[in-house]
Length: 509
Image (cartoon, rainbow, N blue to C red; front, side, top):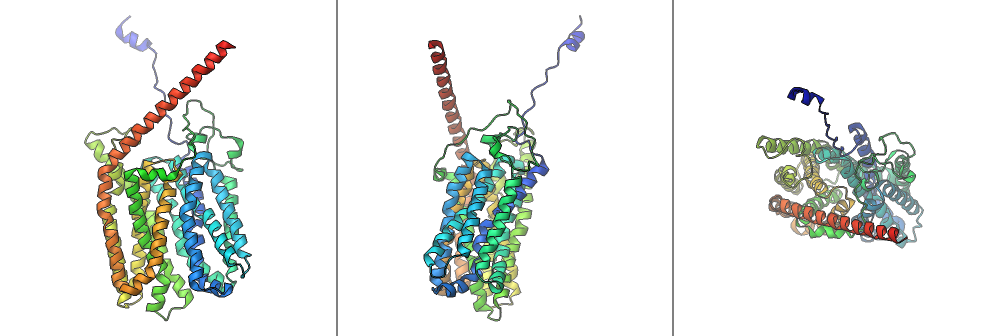
C-alpha cells in the first residue's frame, strides 16, 4: 500500500470543540443586559427622586432641613454598605434570587415610608436605610451578571448599555419627584417607587435566567428547578458533562479585594471622580437658585436633565469606545506577533488589559477637570444660564466614560464577582457622602469658582494614579493567577485525599 493510500485510510481525528464562554446568543445577552439595566435604574432613582421633596417633608415632620438631610446621609451610607452583603451572596447563591430579594425589600420599605406617621421621624430614618439596602445592591448584582455572560472583547459594550439604567435615575429622578410631590404629595413618591419596583420584580421572576457560573456553567448546565424563570424564553439548557462548572464560592469578606494594589488604586480613581461629580450634582439646585433666582422649582428640577442626559449619552458611546479600544490593542499585538487570534481574547497574563481599558482615561480626566472648572466660573460670573447647562451636559458625558472604563477593567480583573462592584460602591459612596456634606461650606468659604478649581485639582491627582495602575497591574494580575492555581491544586489534592479515604472505607466494608 502506498503512502498516499495509507494517509487516505488513516482515520481523521477531529479535535474537540472548545466550549464557548457562554451559550447565550448575542441577542439573548442583550436581552439579559436590558433586564438588569431596568433593575439597576432603582438605585439612583430611589435616592434622587427624594431631593425635591426635602423642604416639604421637613414641614410635614416639623423638623429642620438639616435633620431631614440626615435621611439622605444615612441612605447614602447604606448604599455603600449593603452591596457588600448582597453582592457576595449573589456570588454564592445565584444572581436571580438576590436580584428578586433586593427588589422585594425595596418595595416593602417604600410601603412603610409612604405610611410613616409624621410624628415618627425615627421611623423615616430607619426605613430609608432599608430602602437603600434594597435599591443600591441591584447594581453590584447586575455587574456580576455581565461578568458571567460576556468575554473581555464584548464586556465594554454590555457595561455601557447596562449603565444607561443607573444613569437614567439622576436624569429623571428630581423632575419626577418634584412633579409627584407638587401634584400628589410627598407620599406619592414612595408609592410610585413601590409600584415600579414591584413591577420590575415580577418581570425578573418571569424572565431573568440564572447566570452564576457556579450553578449553570456557561449556561449549558440545567440548574435546579428553583433557579428557572417562570417563562424561560432564552437559553438552551442542555446537560453536557464536558462543560466545566466554576466552583461555588464560599461567603468571603469583600474587603479582602482592597488588599490587591491595582484594585485599590482603581477604586480610588473611581471614587474620587464619582464624588466630585456627585458634589456638582447635589449642589445644582442650591447654586442655580442663588445665581438665577427667577427659576421656579420645576425649572430647577429640569436643570438636572442636562447632567443626567449627558450620562445617558455617554453610556451609549462609552461601550462602543471600550470595545473599539480593546480590539485596537489586540490587533496591535497580533501585528507584532505577540499572540494568536484565538487566545488573545482569553484572560491571560500576556494581554495588556490595563492599557486597553485605561488608554483614554487621562484625556477624559483632563476634559472632566476643564468642564468642572469652567462650570464653576460660569456660575461665579453669573453668565447666561445656557453656559453652565451645556457644561453640565459635558460633565455627565465625560464622567460616565471615565468611570465605565475603570469599572470595566475591575470586572475584567475579577470576573463573575459581584463583590468587586460592592467594594466600588462602598468606596465611592463613602467619598461622595463626605464631599456632599462638605460642598456647601466649601462653596460659602471659597466661592463657586475657586471651590470647583479645588475639586478639579483633586481630580488631577488621579492622572498619575492611572499610569501607576498600567505599570503595576500586570504584576498584580500574575500574582493573583499564581495564587488561584495554587488554591486549585490544593483543592484537587483535598479531593484526591477524600477519594482515597472513601476507597479505604469501601475496602474495609
